[in-house]
Length: 168
Image 1 (cartoon, helix red, strand yellow):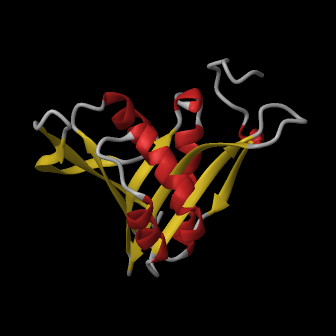
Image 2 (tube, rainbow, N blue to C red):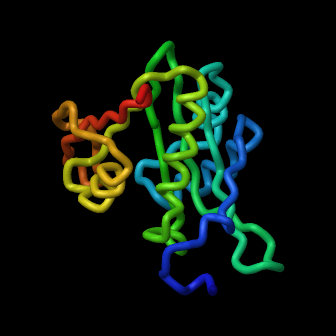
């Protein structure tokens, strides 16, 4: 398997690493590559320091002898019996290869172990690829937030609120 191949990854090559504030710089670098406006290192360090924060860094090993490289991240917040995915991102070389699913599933497992009953997230209404990913993982639309996302050109976009029951 090569980095340029776009086939689905064998999950045995993907490792999830628990992440705290010590990973804020790495998360900020990835967030800046994926989102505008991006969250800076200070904001991410604060977020990752929160007592309810649960975050993972995905690392992919490209073959048996390769060193693992960062592929993506997920940041969630747990509160009582609910949790929310605040951000999930997969670097371009690894998109559409299963890394996003592995990240979301990892956060869902951690939330379920913490006795969370439902996991929420928002997705841009026009982001069909992300919506399909989440729907495939069992999320359903439960609401709409008008003008939730601010775009770099000054326009806004609605967000779909999705939920995944974890108490089954």
